[in-house]
Length: 304
Image 1: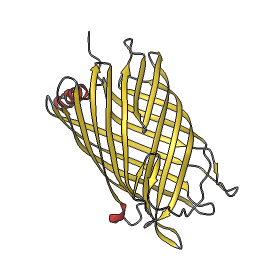
Image 2 (image 1 turned 90 degrees about the vertical axis):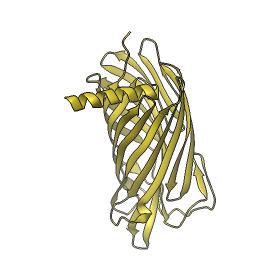
Image 3 (image 1 turned 45 degrees about the vertical axis):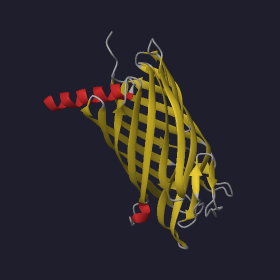
Image 4 (image 1 turned 90 degrees about the horizontal axis):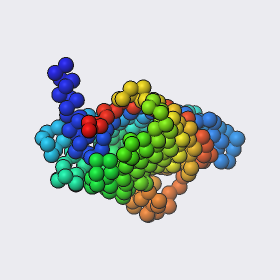
């Protein structure tokens, strides 16, 4: 019990440093789609996906906390019209720190080394190195503004994402907005104590190394790009545990396969700078997504 109490106090202090009223410790997503048709044939495929995100903050002192954790994702889908279903994904570590500069400003920096692969023959090609830095301005206990930069050594080349966002919780604690564009946005409202209704957006561009994807292409990579819009119901099982059911739609979704050496100079969320790459496969259609989320959260509401 003593160790549990120490962990709980650590999480409380971390939440106060971050300037928000909760800390998400564990998040598990399971997603699937109906069958999606390839653009140049009647062949179809669906996408099954699992994501796990674990965060463990450790307090050093009143102004500094260490951030540790891990992330895992796995996909199953066909990449070629006449091919078999492929499994690929990534495993990443989170290593960083949060620093409180004064009552208003705080900063977070996290390193994100990962393996992004089909896990068949892991080598240096499967390793990627990312980092994110965020500055946060605390306007009040229920409102803050943030901006930052995300970088990752994707297989297509260096990838940079400038970010800007805000967090707001209404005085009655029913309406909540959490935005970090262009990566994510969430708006929700508590209809009754055990249920919230909401909408959110997730945008991603990531890459994964593949081995022997076809007889003539021994070393390739997937450039996965998607913009997903969801409507959801969140069921608050307890103050810390919730289950969310989502129905969504993808826009601009692609799972493009390229030869390992086919790269760009660098990438940004809306464009790629450099030579034109030759896509080896055919895209499949956008479509609906069904998702369920299990979330374990420490709420940090202050007593009046």
